[in-house]
Image 1 (tube, rainbow, N blue to C red):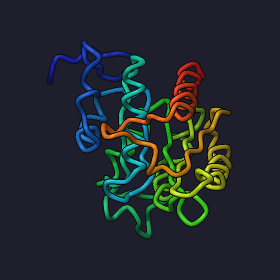
Image 2 (image 1 turned 30 degrees about the horizontal axis):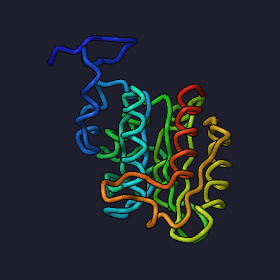
Image 3 (image 1 turned 30 degrees about the vertical axis):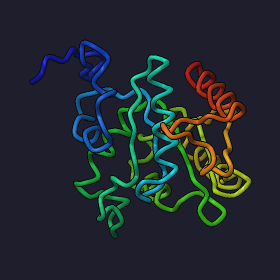
Image 4 (image 1 turned 90 degrees about the vertical axis):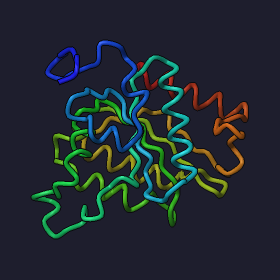
Length: 209
């Protein structure tokens, strides 16, 4: 066992740097020993998406604020997550993801617009997680994005209703970013003043939420 320090039933590295070096797949392997306070969820299984790029931006900004933020991309959902007994006995391959959800106190859902709502794979994630333990009493920030001009307003509304049902408390400040393909600079950072202003404000509010 590496030199980890036990805190509140979990193991945390003596220096808060471990999660900063973990990608999504590595995060799955270490979720059982590291208490992840905030997990950013890239809510699509589409590879190399704008959603993943925006999720990585949020993760960087949270780290800059001193948070040990993890990133979970739904491209890492196991292929067999959808099965007849999913609601009773989740696939063994899903357990590392369940461990991440269980260990997290807060979530940032970065959610693209698919056919007027949020992606079905996000609902699969929520349905596959243990109920009510996984999300009950925890907190979430919602970020919508789209290639069109509304920034997934309807999808974020739909997701908010689900969050209320599972008793996941939603930060009132929800962000909608339209025309997402025009929002990033060459380094993968948001650069438009208004977008940066409102996303920074959302992160500040979420940290004190």
